[in-house]
Image 1: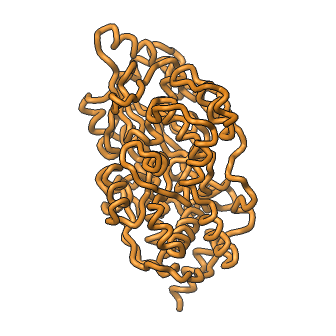
Image 2: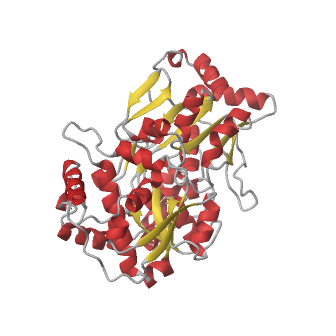
Length: 454
């Protein structure tokens, strides 16, 4: 009884409801959920460790996977019931780029959370090319403009700068491409014959698993990378590289990971799917809980849980750097970044159609989608993958149970965020006009403008 009262007091202090969940009539009560060792797997870990899955009647194993391909394969073959996925994975699988399978998502795990890190040698060259960078705290955001002479120097020697990203349909791939292309650096095209995306590339981007990024940089096999945390902060901690920008500056409040399952699994286990989303929503809210001053209440505890070897397994202090509201670009450049990781606030976890359409536009821009498509195809594809009705069903139960408030959920939304120009190049993105957006970029494929009306 004393432990229960103590736990209730702590929950109340964190601004969370002390009510328990009303269990649904779930079809499957033992689940295996996969993840990659990144900070943004946090909602799965917290739902497990804080008992939110248990309160839904779910016995859940949260199991680390070696790479994104194996994770997806294990969801498709049934080894896993669902998983922490790259936002592009459900879309790419559904349209048949790479592995073909209909994957759906009813929950966005987080916003932001990535960075682009360059080696110390490349950073020194960037500073030489732009003296404004040669200070302890240079002005941000840092574009790739100062990288252009480095790239050109390599090309003149018959070489190409090598950089890493985590997967062909990862946010990281599209973000580093966006950052490079915004400065006029061509990151390469995918074609039916070139699945590596090296065609016309001035910088070659290769796949490296997230935990291996720092070691691959240190070995000299790559000169930079785009990855999620804690692997940018690890480079700072080890003194082997400098994070030059985050994806908050490339695209403010961009969707990073989702929780994915097969369409068949969702249809066969609708109540179970709803129960899982209920637990994840509660985990996201717990992660974003703050006191009256805006300080995070639970992030340090989350970092201690994530630092366990069966989860992310990185040092607590490294995890804490970004998760508690600040980010080290250099040891001399620590910046407040309270929105580096967003898990719940501002409707972050809602499955927006417009998020899915952005990823589809990037797949087309870089040639992963090989043929021009009408705007209607982008909308229909996003709606076949993103499941806001499942999210709202889960949220409705949580509202009735007192775990969330009415304003936490965009109940009446059509699934499209308003147009935004919060990108590093200032180009506006309107999901309702995907062809116009594709054509607005200097580098990349272009499609007939009239397709926006079809």
